[in-house]
Image (cartoon, rainbow, N blue to C red):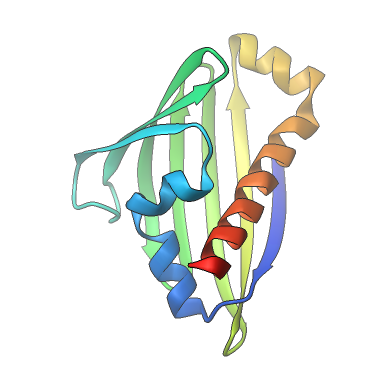
Length: 144
């Protein structure tokens, strides 16, 4: 499953990236995030790994983030591995003008087991969840 999303944020790109690139801010725009733990490599840099734990209903979901490409303020790519799900994400940031930034988001999922069934039954829910996080980041960033 692959899809792209886009959102405009009323902030200069430099400020938007400063907020996006700080793991301490993740809980402000990713509901359910319980913890973010750096595992290896230089934090936020290519090949760095971190463990993210989310509470979804009565389940804890653990995933391993691996930074695969970092060229900020333009791009940040990574993979996210969890039980039954592998996710690749490309984030691209471009200046609309000096006070507005466009965030282009591309993702690809490979699902197995129960998650594959969920992908067939409710493919739109993945896209909806991704866009929800983007909108929450926009709200957080524009108020920060």
